[in-house]
Image 1 (cartoon, helix red, strand yellow):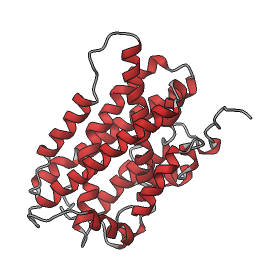
Image 2: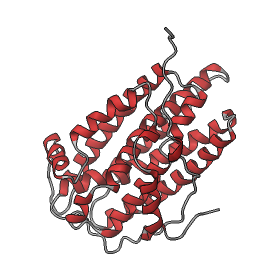
Image 3: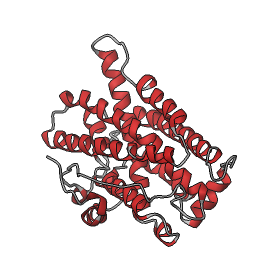
Length: 298
């Protein structure tokens, strides 16, 4: 019997050439509580605007260092497209933060902590050239693959979150979230494929998943609590796991069951991101998104 582990099951029909899109969103008419009647879900989703700009700039920084190691030209093209999309995501979410501040919710104390995490804790280190420096680069490549598993999960969720429409979510915010979510589904395989191309070690994949998952849970709950406590319209409000569970059951946040199921999915030795989500659905939304009607950038 062979001891060779099974290869990830890639779905070729889900691959698409990637391009960054010009997008334009205007926030003047978007209220602080853009999801009526559910401030907890509202602010839990708002954490995206705090985490993503720093995180996606970090993705871009790491991947620019990785480009010289890529020997597959098709994968290199995917990575270049990924870099373009992630840079645009960071800019679009960054633009929301001044609007939140104008509405009385200053995100600066929290974003300063997030910036420190990505720039200092996960940033470049003074290491000697050779194995040590490459080890740290591969650790970060593996961590990005784990994080991208969850961004694709969230992207797929928001594309199908009909309850947000039924609750009367602000159309501009919903379009931002779905444009971003659609591109996360569109490029969901790139980070994993890059990791498998450069390293593919299962122990590293599992270890960095644990690090990424723990960090995401910590940062997300901290961000939700910060927003709830500093909401100028509901000062001193609290955030709790019970609220997350109930919002998931209502459909205004991902369900707890789906979140837990995503863990063994990623850790399966036959996992490949192309097995989850629909590229066709993502592309269809991108073709109709009001905010993404500027088309592709050169």
